[in-house]
Amino acid sequence: MNITADMVKELRTITGAGVLDCRNALLAAAGDFEKAAEILRRQGMAEAEERKEREANEGLIAAYIHTGDRLGAMVELNCETDFVAHTNEFRNLAKELTMQVAASNPLYVCRADIPGEVIARQEEAYRAEMGAENKPPHIVERIISGKMEKFYKESCLLEQPYIRDPDITVGELIDRLNATLGENIVVRRFVRYELGK
Image (cartoon, rainbow, N blue to C red; front, top):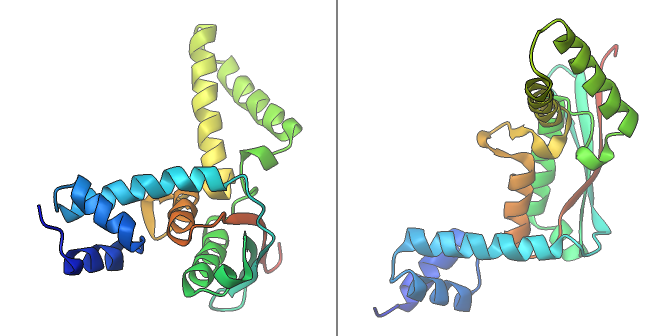
């Protein structure tokens, strides 16, 4: 199939990928834009995983105050370069994350941030809850494991469903921008304030 410059330009506009990458994806997808976009997305996600080991010391601190001034949130979002920190995409992500924190009230950024004693206490509470049930031990462990997964999804910002699109997690939202901008993007920390609490 003949891939025209207009086709490459259109795919580039949709995905934000480089010209050569768009051309190669269109060739691989035989001109099908949806398949080409999926190829580029998969490529970007693979590259994003590799970038996660790189230092991210630049960035910004974003703040959000909810209507009525009774609830607010701040998020420190880091990236590799000052240039990316000043892009609209990065700033919009930071703003979205502050609203996510305000709306969903996570306790930790990710699972690795949860202290071991909190995990042990949570598992013990679930185990005590299951004590009255007369179930085999392997079933009890499976139920506790499922309850812990739910706890992680509620408590960890990166595992929560994104407030604007519950089909993806906050971590997936960040990974998508990571793939688009070509830099490691990290939520360093956050704080949420609610009047009287």
